[in-house]
Amino acid sequence: MNRILVLYDSKSGNVAKMAQLVAEGAKTIADTEVRVRSVDEAKAEDVLWCDGLAVGSPTNMGILSWKMKRFWDEVMLEHWMKIDGKIACAFSSSGGWGGGMEMACQSILTVMINFGFLVFGVTDYAAQKFTLHYGAVASKEPREPETQEACRILGKRLAEWTAVCVHGRKDEHPSGKMATRMAPG
Image (cartoon, rainbow, N blue to C red; front, side):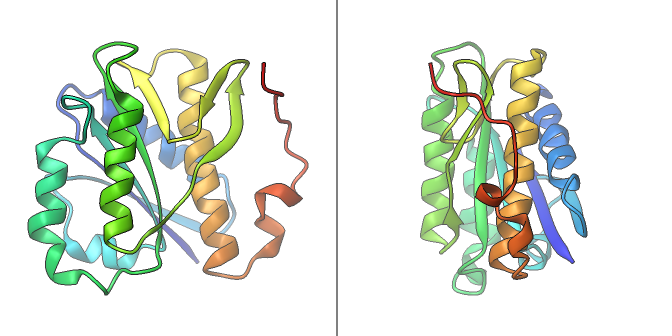
């Protein structure tokens, strides 16, 4: 069984909505169990349980939120080396386009890398000119169909990679599927 944790912090509720969309995408892969946890309710056991982890945070001055950073600094620090080799990705929302969401995703990925997570980028397009190379991003609430699809693609890709890399399910490899991809430009 593929085990995915969607861990998020959400001040306004926007990242929480993104987390639900990421979870929807992960659930499209067969034999995948998904847990969605806010950083306020999450426990170290949730992270130890999962094969793959999607981490979402509001953009806070271009980086992850203090609550999410505190979770990794205080709750997970004693579990460092126990979670090495799990797979992770990131998502973020800010108050507007150009608000630093991709930088926030990179700061999340930096924390994940320091804990030994394997992180990935997504080459698929959610719509023409709408990519999620560093993770799924939204300006405020994920209302636009493209933003919602980006979140779903991120969750699906996380579940695909964990199915392939953790469980040896080569049939779930993204490049082996006949997915419709939009060309750049």
